Image 1 (cartoon, helix red, strand yellow):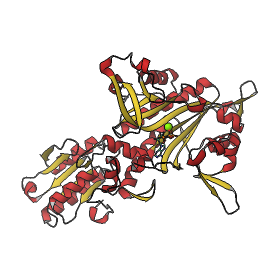
Image 2 (tube, rainbow, N blue to C red; image 1 turned 90 degrees about the vertical axis):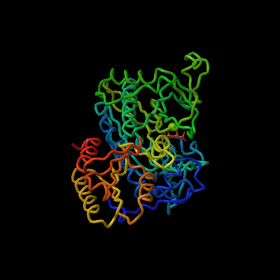
Image 3 (cartoon, rainbow, N blue to C red; image 1 turned 180 degrees about the vertical axis):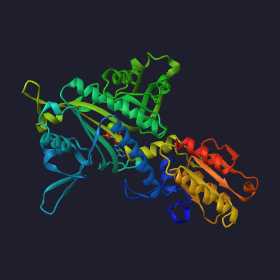
Image 4 (cartoon, rainbow, N blue to C red; image 1 turned 120 degrees about the vertical axis):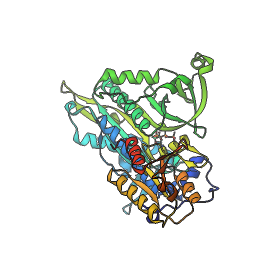
Length: 445
Ligand code: ATP
Ligand code: MG
């Protein structure tokens, strides 16, 4: 993309309404525009990152054997009356009537709808296990929408639902989700720690929230600092291997890590004092096994091996796709702007032409641009007629991990400058060597 042809409405001033850094930077970098409280338009740069995050979530869900589908945002109230949640859900649910006076709602979540699909089409245990998921807009009329996309009213969520014959199978589905979430967040350059959460009215031990540590997080968290040493890495995993998935769950959830809802002071105090941490975190996902609550309420049974009908065991598993943009920025920025992890960056590298209009510099930039595109990489070429300082400031603000700076002086010596956004370190290299280095970083060689 050439910047002169792009739509990147960066702001010079810091928007006064934004209280936390990720919100400020998303506005300044021209990623989002508020349309009303807690509802945003996704401008091109923000939309690109949102799509990158969505792609990672899809890939990791499907790697785990989960099946994508798409359910609507508007739902009929009838199903929610069947489950009893139409009245229970309260003011967070946006209720609408259509022209015929029928009660509709903008879905805050999809347990009822997906259970209805299941009960209409699945009748035998032989069709299990089954996990369906979608990535769709949700609406919750939050009392205090704030922090930009972090706590929106309209937000983008991946929600997945497993259907299993037995509790044991459903717990394997739970473990599979935990493992796939660890991979998902790590690919985005994030450490998200599974923490024991509150099962709510249904109770039970089977719910974990994934938290990204950040001072601006809304949740208070208590943990053993040893959990921050754990990383999933690129280990091979067989998602059908029950023992292997269980092993990963144990590895990542045995050490103390809880939100304030389940915090147990006595247990916490058993951790050696120097490892006790009280901090704040951003909830970027949650997994939940809830047994037969919805299948009982909605009559989602299958014929079991003995021919008798059994209610299926279910769980639901969410990832806050749009919130993740805020969480990633909270975890990765400096005073000059965003620092995108390579896994989600909107463009792989920026090309800065120090002297637009200089025949040699222009040609070198064009050549880099063409070669990078041919490699399957997407550069953002700042081809504006601007001073170098302004170009650098824009690149730093929007946070591309790599910048290639091209100027007449360097070209005389046959070099361009390659700069890491994260470390600020630069090196002079021949243009092709710079390209090869970037290609290698993104695995394009
Ligand atoms: P919270 O406690 O933050 O209100 P929740 O526990 O009600 O969230 P879930 O039902 O677990 O949310 O939804 C799954 C994920 O969707 C959450 O882990 C979070 O990342 C994201 N999410 C929930 N509410 C919002 C919101 N208002 N804006 C953006 N993302 C949200
Ligand atoms: Mg939650």
